[in-house]
Amino acid sequence: MGGHHGEPYTVPHASAYKVENVPQLVEVKEALGRQGLKDPWLRNEAWRYEPKAFGTHRSRLNAFLFRGVGVGFAAFLATCAVEYALGIGKGQGGHGHGHGHEEHDDKGHH
Image (cartoon, rainbow, N blue to C red):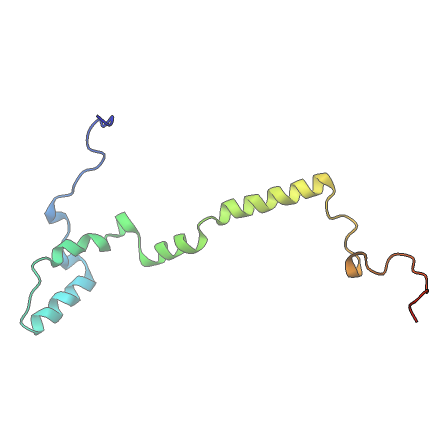
Protein backbone atom coordinates (compact mmCIF):
# COMPACT_ATOMS: atom_id res chain seq x y z
CA MET A 1 0.00 0.00 0.00
CA GLY A 2 1.06 3.57 -0.52
CA GLY A 3 3.07 2.88 -3.67
CA HIS A 4 6.45 2.65 -1.93
CA HIS A 5 9.08 0.91 -3.98
CA GLY A 6 11.72 0.71 -1.29
CA GLU A 7 13.34 2.97 1.23
CA PRO A 8 13.65 6.56 -0.04
CA TYR A 9 16.70 7.07 2.13
CA THR A 10 19.64 5.21 3.56
CA VAL A 11 20.46 5.35 7.23
CA PRO A 12 24.16 6.03 7.73
CA HIS A 13 26.14 3.75 9.97
CA ALA A 14 26.71 5.05 13.50
CA SER A 15 30.46 5.28 12.91
CA ALA A 16 29.90 7.89 10.17
CA TYR A 17 29.46 10.63 12.75
CA LYS A 18 32.15 11.16 15.35
CA VAL A 19 32.37 13.69 18.15
CA GLU A 20 36.04 14.21 17.28
CA ASN A 21 35.09 15.61 13.86
CA VAL A 22 32.96 18.40 15.36
CA PRO A 23 34.89 21.11 17.26
CA GLN A 24 31.77 22.31 19.11
CA LEU A 25 31.07 18.83 20.44
CA VAL A 26 34.72 18.29 21.38
CA GLU A 27 34.46 21.45 23.46
CA VAL A 28 31.33 20.13 25.20
CA LYS A 29 33.00 16.77 25.81
CA GLU A 30 36.05 18.45 27.35
CA ALA A 31 33.90 20.75 29.53
CA LEU A 32 31.98 17.75 30.82
CA GLY A 33 35.25 15.89 31.41
CA ARG A 34 36.57 18.75 33.56
CA GLN A 35 33.54 18.27 35.81
CA GLY A 36 33.98 14.51 35.92
CA LEU A 37 31.01 13.89 33.63
CA LYS A 38 30.50 12.37 30.23
CA ASP A 39 27.61 12.21 27.80
CA PRO A 40 27.32 8.79 26.15
CA TRP A 41 24.75 10.20 23.71
CA LEU A 42 26.85 13.16 22.51
CA ARG A 43 27.68 11.29 19.31
CA ASN A 44 23.99 11.42 18.41
CA GLU A 45 24.29 15.19 17.96
CA ALA A 46 27.18 15.04 15.48
CA TRP A 47 24.89 14.74 12.43
CA ARG A 48 23.56 18.25 13.08
CA TYR A 49 26.98 19.70 12.31
CA GLU A 50 27.45 17.89 8.99
CA PRO A 51 27.96 20.65 6.37
CA LYS A 52 27.28 18.30 3.45
CA ALA A 53 23.77 17.58 4.69
CA PHE A 54 22.80 20.87 6.29
CA GLY A 55 25.29 23.43 4.99
CA THR A 56 27.26 25.88 7.02
CA HIS A 57 25.83 28.65 9.17
CA ARG A 58 26.61 31.16 6.40
CA SER A 59 24.95 29.08 3.68
CA ARG A 60 21.81 28.59 5.79
CA LEU A 61 21.72 32.33 6.53
CA ASN A 62 22.09 33.19 2.83
CA ALA A 63 19.33 30.75 1.92
CA PHE A 64 17.07 32.31 4.56
CA LEU A 65 17.76 35.92 3.59
CA PHE A 66 17.69 35.56 -0.18
CA ARG A 67 15.05 32.89 -0.68
CA GLY A 68 12.59 34.12 -3.28
CA VAL A 69 14.70 37.03 -4.54
CA GLY A 70 14.89 35.55 -8.05
CA VAL A 71 11.15 34.97 -8.26
CA GLY A 72 10.47 38.43 -6.83
CA PHE A 73 12.78 40.10 -9.32
CA ALA A 74 11.18 38.18 -12.20
CA ALA A 75 7.74 39.33 -11.00
CA PHE A 76 9.02 42.91 -10.83
CA LEU A 77 10.27 42.73 -14.41
CA ALA A 78 7.01 41.19 -15.59
CA THR A 79 5.04 43.96 -13.88
CA CYS A 80 7.21 46.62 -15.51
CA ALA A 81 6.76 44.98 -18.91
CA VAL A 82 2.96 44.78 -18.54
CA GLU A 83 2.75 48.42 -17.39
CA TYR A 84 4.91 49.51 -20.31
CA ALA A 85 2.86 47.47 -22.80
CA LEU A 86 -0.45 48.83 -21.51
CA GLY A 87 0.82 52.40 -21.15
CA ILE A 88 0.04 52.47 -17.45
CA GLY A 89 1.77 55.25 -15.56
CA LYS A 90 2.60 57.43 -18.56
CA GLY A 91 1.91 61.12 -18.12
CA GLN A 92 1.66 60.90 -14.34
CA GLY A 93 5.09 62.26 -13.60
CA GLY A 94 3.97 65.87 -12.97
CA HIS A 95 4.05 67.61 -9.61
CA GLY A 96 1.03 67.01 -7.46
CA HIS A 97 -0.29 64.13 -9.54
CA GLY A 98 -2.96 66.09 -11.37
CA HIS A 99 -3.65 68.77 -8.77
CA GLY A 100 -3.12 72.27 -10.12
CA HIS A 101 -2.98 71.31 -13.79
CA GLU A 102 -6.61 72.09 -14.51
CA GLU A 103 -7.89 75.52 -15.45
CA HIS A 104 -9.15 77.21 -12.29
CA ASP A 105 -11.54 80.07 -12.12
CA ASP A 106 -11.07 82.39 -9.20
CA LYS A 107 -14.67 82.23 -7.97
CA GLY A 108 -14.72 81.74 -4.25
CA HIS A 109 -10.94 81.42 -3.85
CA HIS A 110 -10.07 84.82 -2.36
